[in-house]
Amino acid sequence: MPTASHHLAILRRLGLVRLRADRNTPWYALDPDALTLLARSALRREQVAALAPVGHDEAETFQVLRNFISVDGQITQTPASRNKMMTRNQGAYRRLAETDWQAD
Image (cartoon, rainbow, N blue to C red; front, side, top):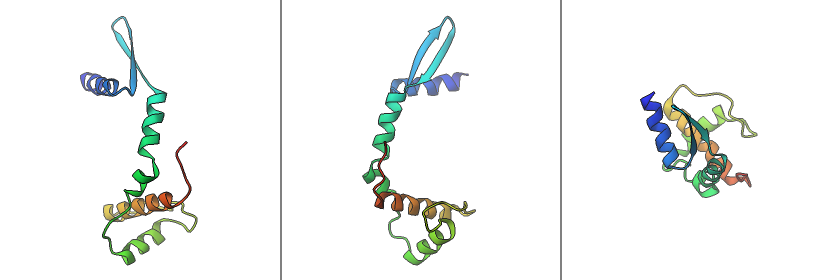
C-alpha cells in the first residue's frame, strides 16, 4: 500500500485526484475537471501532429500503414514488431492530425 499511497500523493499534488479522509482510511477520487483540461491540452492538433514519424523511409512506412490500418483509418491489427507498431501508431496520429478532429 505505501507505493500506491505514494503515487496517489503525487497525483494529488498535480491536482488530478482529490483526497477525503475517513478516520484511518484515505479515499481518493479522480478530479474530472482536471482530467478534462489535461486531455484537451494533450490532444491539441499540434501535440498529435508532433507524434508523426520523422526521417522514416516513406515506402516502408506506407507498407506498414497499408498492412495495419484500413482505408477508412481503422486499426486492423496489432503488429508483433515494436518498430512496426510505432510506425502504425505514428501514422494513425498523423492521419488524425490531418483531419478536422478536435478533442471535446
